[in-house]
Image 1 (cartoon, rainbow, N blue to C red):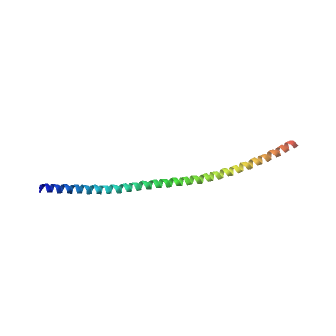
Image 2: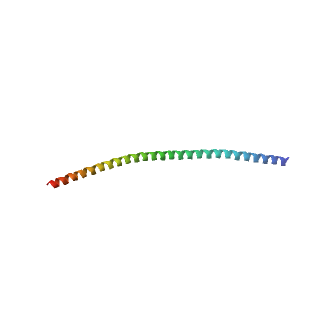
Image 3: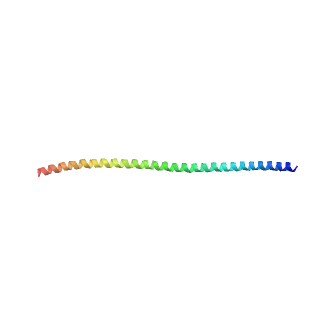
Length: 96
C-alpha cells in the first residue's frame, strides 16, 4: 500500500507539474504576443512619421523648384534688358 501511495503521489506530482508548466507557457506566450504587437505599433507609428516628413520635404522641394524657375525667368528678362540698354548706350556713344 505504501508503494502504491508513493506511486500515486508521484504521478499526481508529475501531472500537476505538467499542468503548471503548460499554464506558464500560455501566460508567457500571451505576453510575447502583446510585446510583439506593441513593438509593431511603435514601428508603424515611426514609419507614419517618416512618411509625413518625406511628404513635407516633397512639398518644400516643389516650392523651391518653382521659386528657382521664377528667379531664372527674372534673370533672363534682366539679361535681355541689359542687352538692350548696352545697344542704346552704344548708339548714344556713336552719336556723341
